[in-house]
Image (cartoon, rainbow over all chains, first blue to last red; front, side):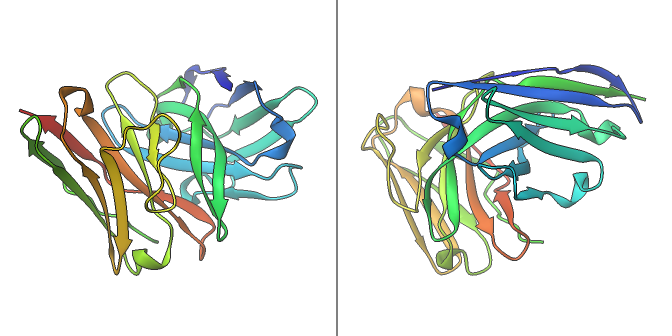
Length: 121
Length: 108
């Protein structure tokens, strides 16, 4: 299993950026996928998740209306479109796979190495 | 919104037992997971569904969850266990994953 994020970089406040995560080593279309971020020196914050077929998406309140998660199962990839970027969005963004699911909840068993997004004002 | 609270730091001597708590309202009614993160690395799942260890995680890592508190216990702690640890649960009311505030474990 491998998850490789890309697309991070410097973006101006109010600008847009699209993050990508390329998956390999497993049947991508069978799994929910997530984005989790970590601001410099801070803890983990879950950002969004998407169902196997893309029909269900969930977001943390702080990004609702600004970020969009999507996926392309033919390309084994999940994306995070970041719009109206703000300074507080500065973080390393990880993609992670849902696994060990029971009772409506899962754990995140594989994580990528992350991609750094810096929002400048 | 749902919150999970952890102590900022825990210190332990090599070979001793470290316990890290994670507190949240009725957390025992949810499943808790635990992640280890070493500097410059991605998080690593060490406990899922309260008590289970993924393949490759040493037996010295164990978990429990009851009432309002989940606990990660590291027995016979080694210097390689020095890391930040985060608990995580699913808040069904908001359909959000929630991470704990994180605990830095120092092996003195």
